[in-house]
Every structure is written in C-alpha cells, then in structure tokens.
Image (cartoon, rainbow, N blue to C red):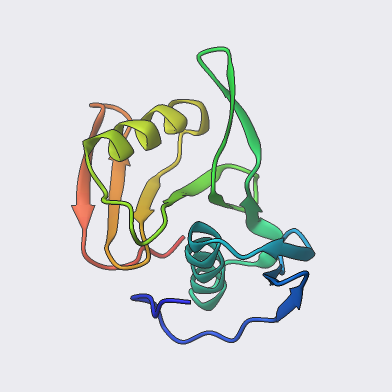
Amino acid sequence: MLKLNFPDFEFKLKNRDNKTYIFDIIRKKFILLSPEEWVRQHVVKLLIEKGVSKNHIGVEKKIIVNKLSKRFDVVAFDRNGLVKMLVECKAPSINIDQKVFDQTLIYNKNLNSDYIMITNGIMHFIFKINIQDKSYDFINEFPII
C-alpha cells in the first residue's frame, strides 16, 4: 500500500483468496484492505496515539441524514458519549474538494462534533466547528480531544 502522510504504524495484515485484509482493532475483525480502509486504519491509530481510548472510537456506524441511511468513517467520543471529532476518510486518489467538505458538514448536522478532520491520507484538513454562529476555523495542530 501507498505510504501515507501519517506516522509509521504497525498493522496486522493477512492474505486470503488473493486479497489482503487488515485487522481493525475497533471492530475487532479483519476488513478487506481498500485504499480508503488504509487511510481509515491510519486515522484510528493516530487517534489512539493522541490519547483517545479505543473505547471512545467508532468506525463506520450508521446515521440517518435527510431520511437516508449513511455511514460515517470515524468518530471520537468524549466520556459522556458526545462526538468530539468526526473524521471523513477518502482514498489517496480522491481529491478533497468542496463536495467532500459539504458531505462531511451534512453528517455533522446529526453528530454535532466539535472538530472535523477530512483526509485522503496525503492531505489533512482539521477544523473547529462554532455551532453558535455556524462557522468553522481551520486549525494547524491536532486538537486535544
């Protein structure tokens, strides 16, 4: 897999039927390794490295957006179960454009996260949401969540 713009992490991989799988420590099972999954697993490891407990991370959970069933990629919860960070992961070949930002902001209407991260593994955008005035500010450092 492609080297991403993340620290070097160790992953448990296995091959079966000429396909590669990666162990997801949150879902506690092997997942087919796609380019997007490669990014998602790096994000999970990054959150853990930044001090987020595995018990406070959700991966690919269902949410309802405009009466449609959708799945977010990764969220980090606080001790009270409130979403602190929503992460949208894309494959490295996908450009992060306005459509991706809009998609993520729509998901956040249901989740009310304090922070959003959008990444394709190469480029990362992190911003803080200001719910009162419905704005956001890009930040350069990974927040303490």
